[in-house]
Length: 467
Image 1 (cartoon, helix red, strand yellow):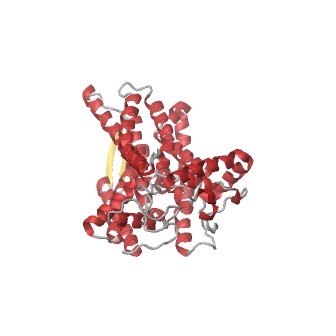
Image 2 (tube, rainbow, N blue to C red):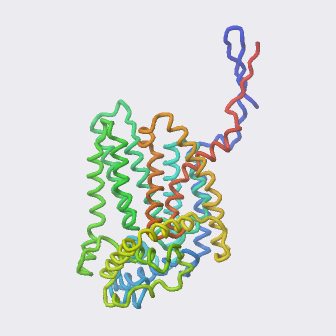
Image 3 (cartoon, one colour):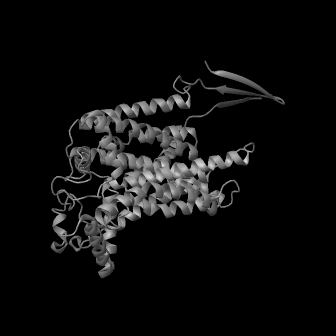
């Protein structure tokens, strides 16, 4: 039944009619969030069951073969080595640092407890990722645009097919995206915090310490999963400094120093380990040189050749480098790749521009299988209009407050990440799956657009004025 309230205002009676809410609308935010998370877990569990208890190569998932092999080798006491010559140019029995140490330890730990069953690892991974990614997406979206947008953002994360597909693959992508979302959420809490007046200085300092430690841990996790994230760190710190520079309740330098100490503590053990194995400085992984060399090799000309089109990347490695170990080879290839750029900067610029369509590819292709085409179109292709509309709405609302406030807003941090991360891959090496962190970060803007579209025609109340 519709509720009716009479309000007297002079000679007028104002009748407020409150439309009856459905039982679904009466559910609390926490209940709806639990429902969204549960639905996402069920979908991701289905993906894990589909991929099964074996490790096979499906489109965009070749890396899981290497992680599976390394995890088993670690369990067998052989350390981070392969029993035969392995991609990209690792000799049998020789040390490798090409792959994420953290993810290998994750797999090896599960196999140690439950036996070597990839399906078990897939299910555990989907549970962790399925809960954390959805909650972080909700937290960021709600912080920017309110709880309603938070719920829409959480649902959009669940419905994004690429996230479901990769959540069950034995690769770094699922945890890497989660760590990035955690990093940005921690930074937003630091930059956008509004402490209540009743909090004493000691409580405020304790909260700031917690935020700084959280930032350091999430950045550390992201870097250990993919060292590329270090390139974004200066931009992250710059935004934090700008966002809190006029606030008396927090010191940006204290946050930066504490979080940096945590990041160094997470990286240093692996740097020491690498030096002991290679007898040279290797910060974390030996993959930057390979990627930059292959991504900018003259064989591309001025048009980027995708991994699917390239017949044999290993054949491009000069024969005189064959005696180098993996660390030395990575460094030599990075030097040679930079020389390619110096020798022909115009070609490098043209080549980089040609990578843009590859990075943003969302249309079906005759060279791709059905799984790839459906996932590509139903993910980025479907969400792209919402990304664009949401960003436009955000700029329209924020520019009212001035450009300076726009730059220190939480949404500016998300867009900064999307821009910097995209430029990094356009200038180096690109695949569609390398864009997925950007997709995850843009979902709050899609939530804003979807919320406006879905709720704009639903009135909160109907007002009838009687003379």
